[in-house]
Every structure is written in C-alpha cells, then in structure tokens.
Image (cartoon, rainbow, N blue to C red; front, side, top):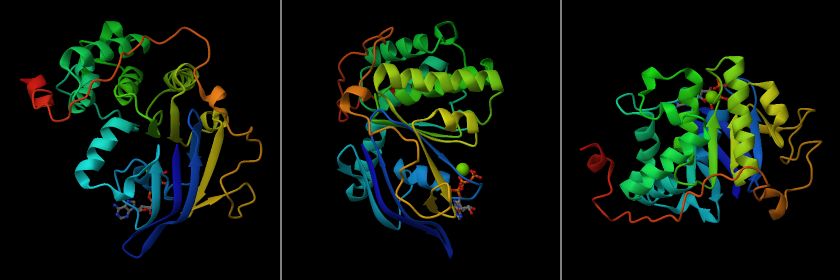
Length: 269
Ligand SMILES: Nc1ncnc2c1ncn2[C@@H]1O[C@H](COP(=O)(O)OP(=O)(O)OP(=O)(O)O)[C@@H](O)[C@H]1O
Ligand SMILES: [Mg+2]
C-alpha cells in the first residue's frame, strides 16, 4: 500500500531523515512515535506528497509519486490521501457539512453526491445534528471528527494523521482513537498516525520508532520496521471490513476533474 525506500531529507545542513525504509499494508493502523524533532512530521509530509524527499522513492497504491508532476500530484493527493492535523484546520467560514464536501467537489464529484457523502459521514461520526454549524460553534472533539470525515470523503487509500488527538481532552481523545479503529474494522481503512500518546500507540498494529531521522528498534539499533510483537502481515481477508453495522454505501465515485462546473468556487457561489 505504501512503500518508502531510502528516504532522505535535509533542511540546509540539517539532515532530518537519514534513509527511511517503510512498508505499510492495506488496512493497517500504524503509529509513528519519537522525540520532538525526530523527523516524524517531515516523514508524514513526504509520505503524503506534501513535501518531496531529496532522495528515495515513495510508492502509494502502486503509483511512484516521485514521478508525478505538480498538477498530477495535487490530483493524486486529493484522490488517494486523507489528512488529519493536530489542529483541525477546518475553514472557519464554512459549515461542518461544507468543510467535508470541499475535497469531494475539488475532486470533481457532483454537488449532490458530495452533499450525500458528507451527510452520511457526519452521521457516522455522530454529528448529524451539527452539520450546519460552523467550526467556531463546535467543540474540539467535534471539530476533529469533522476533520476525519473530511479526510474520508474521497475514499482515500490512506489517512495520514499528525498528532490528531494532540489538542483534545482525554474523553475526546479516547473517542477519536476508537473512531480510527472502528473505521479500520468497518472499511479496511489504512491509517498512519504520528502521536505522542502512548495509549494510542499501544493500540495500533505496529509502532515505528523514529529517532534522529532513523527508524530504530527497542534496543536503539537500526532495523527494518518490524516490531517485536507484530502479528503476521495482514492477509487481504484480515484487512477487509469485518462484520458490524455497515457504513452507509457512499456510492460509486463519479469524477470528472475537467468539469469546470464542479469546483469549490461554484459551490461557494
Ligand atoms: N521547513 C523546515 N525548514 C527547516 N527545518 C525544518 C523544517 N521542517 C522541519 N525542520 C526541522 O527538522 C527537524 C524535524 O522536524 P519535524 O517537524 O519532522 O519533527 P517532529 O518529529 O515532527 O517533532 P514534533 O514531535 O515536535 O512535532 C526539526 O529539527 C525541525 O526544526
Ligand atoms: Mg511533528
């Protein structure tokens, strides 16, 4: 699903990532932990194509993103990667529903379909009643759940989250973490989560320890990213959604990126 090979990145003379190799399977929930400044955010941004590595390759769902043009990259990101940040980064002038719809509209999905998906996702997040509220009228936990809905609206291959519960109190934190595993269990959604939260890291399938720009194991030596008590790699069966209340069918994806009538601008007009 995600293959990183020999990722190196420097900012000026500061070598931040020193040759990272990482494989993430579909349906895995992987945490990345490490001290401040270890390079976690940098790694996540490179994984998410928001930043480019100096060296190495990033392959997501079979696409070598290092070969894409800026325009292709923007499209690829919109279609394949969902982001959740520490601070929700919702657009304050739009309602929760509109915030969730925007990536779908940018992706060329019709207004009606985007609306339907956003409503369904917000209901799933327990936010149906809050859909018409703007971020300033939502609690911190609600805002983060809207941000998760927004990350999911284009059915991405992977959701990348950078300290998603970093700004939440313990109750909201626990609820958000439950949501991640619920989404994985029901949808087979893949998550890569940078966190300082030990209880979250302990719940994930695998924890990548980053220190000084390198992946380390418990002993501090360099290693392939294979943790000690990791179960076998998930088979397609395990990665598939398990039984449970099914998520609403979000329907087939109709995308026409060339359709100029499907832009956020039209939506906002
Ligand atoms: N755009 C940039 N320009 C220069 N230096 C940068 C830039 N981005 C990050 N750095 C430096 O790279 C190093 C790694 O930063 P990064 O944000 O990846 O750390 P982190 O592991 O996410 O830390 P934290 O836990 O504090 O968020 C830090 O020393 C940081 O100062
Ligand atoms: Mg960081």
